[in-house]
Image (cartoon, rainbow, N blue to C red; front, side, top):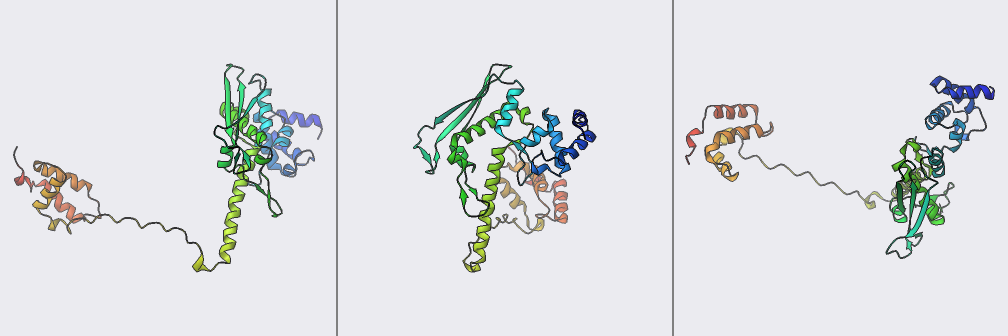
Length: 305
């Protein structure tokens, strides 16, 4: 297919045209390896490019696809470039790196106790927008955990330890764009976010595997047992066995305990009848109580003022 023909196809954003373009991309050595010979992924990337108003090849070369999960991402630099190209801000982003108050210098003896604020000026309104990310957040959220080496020989130092300011800048500008210019990201994530999430999940899975291995070599009697859930509390017993055991005195006593005037016997019985559940009162007992109520059985015990 000639370049002219491919360009013509890409100008038509219908699904049929995007599918034709995707077949071309899938056979090209210019696309990243993850897209080669994968017509479906190339098609979805082409759709994404149409939404973003960018060339499909540009999007595929910038797109990050994690090893697990279906959410794709782009770098913070890519999003910032989009923000500038769309002429949404004045100039570019500015960063302020600062030490947190009360800091003793390091967190966990490894990470500098700093924060980064990313700020832009909105071109349309002149209003400043800013977002701040601190190393304390990065550590608390698990972003700063070291990454396991692929060969299983140990851990790689966290980038939050080797290049802390750069990592916090990426986080801060990504939050700024997501919160104030969401159309720029089109619902995608940022590469650093996806990598951090993946690292946290891998670390969690590694702990599970370690525990499984430990359990395999530990006698069952010595394994740590999970905490047992407490037994649910039993409901209080229902007084008396049924309507045949209930006297007028019982009912008046219950009313007195509830602070109900004795003149309201019939209303009290009506409310009690409606509140009883099938497990507390059989159908026959309920019918008997209802008949007593309708007959005014207890009216003779009403009192005057």
